[in-house]
Amino acid sequence: MFKKVLPLSGILSLRFLGLFLVLPVLSVYAMTLPGATPLLVGIIVGGYALTQTIFQVPFGTMSDKIGRKPTIFIGLVIFLIGSVVAALSTDIYMLMIGRFLQGAGAIGSVVTAMISDLVEEEVRGKAMAMMGGTIALSFAFAMGVGPVVGAHYGVDTLFWITALLSLVAMVVLFTNVPTPPKIKHIYHDSTKTSDILKDSNLFNMIIINGMQKGLMTMAFVIIPIILTSDVFKWHKADLWMAYVPAMILGLVAMGPAAVFGEKYNKPKQIFLISIVLFITSFLLMGLATSSILFVIGVVSFFIGFNMMEPLVQSMISKFAKVHQKGAALGIANSFSYFMTFVGGTAAGMFLDFSNREVLGLSAAAIAFLWLLWTFKLQNPIKHSHLYIPEDHVDMQKLNALEHEHIAEWYINETEKVVVVKYVSASIGEDQIKAKILK
Image: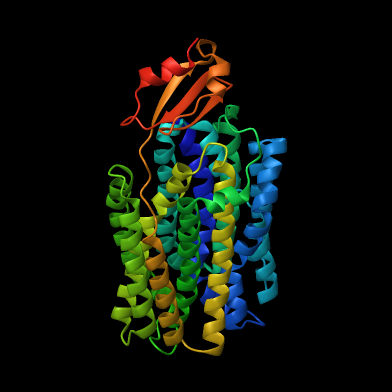
């Protein structure tokens, strides 16, 4: 599994590392450019996510037609061009164009779908958790490095580093990523968006994914602008003092949260704790009268974000049926990118027309409603998987296979294997074999 997942996780992490590197200092940097306003700065912080939202589905469709690898390569090239434009920007509007181009290379869902293609069902949750974990590590690393490099060498240098990371990702793509197998599933009609949205657990996970990312961009508009404003009067070079402790404690919290969520099948509980930390963080960032309390709010936010991140994609993959995984991940990622844009824009608007106190209280109130919503989520049912050589199976019996404790079946046509997903506590392998063997 590791050889299949690590290269793809690496590609996605390199791309996210490039995006995350600029986040700790982007809003305060953008405010220095000609034509800047808090609203435009908010749009720039979340701008890449708007084009991500628009291009998620086209890139997914393209990957079905021309293949996953060529589609990922095209996305990385567009991301590279956007990074160069942002690095060369001399005013707020050129920076905005660069950020929009960065987002137009919308490969997130394609990479996630490819991991689903490559990895066996019973370890797919671990694979998605690994992918989420590498993204969270990129996030944490960027929070420590971004402010230091940006302060000493300029934010344009961060964009050049981002361009270089996209080139490294291209090399990884063509040297280490295997070709996925061909899967034939039980379902004979196309995946319907309505079926995904009607599934309460999938719908709840889509909301969780979107809210997490929307509040993330809100935080990254607030943190550098407020700390360097007349309220606390920090220098840009001092921002690392807020981000580094938050990064360290976020990393410490991420491991136990991932283990508890995956191994003990308690992701709902992790999500609820994370949201409480989000509420605390925005209350402190909105109302703190000392920089120490404000930094505690920043730390609280990072811990909540890192606890949640490794589990989100994994849970979507677990709740979706095999024929829904690509579409479900695409919808979830599209919504999360849309909310990323909304979060940054809303934060900029609040700071433009109101103040940080109103913004902090509003974000905390939204997070509280999110907390109430998340109580509806159920922890996933644990399934087992039965693998049978295709030539041992009576296809007529297989097509007629129905049982309340059999979730689904599908055929790995590349490896010539029939896979049956079932609840082992309620039905045994011998009972299933009796129903489908020749």
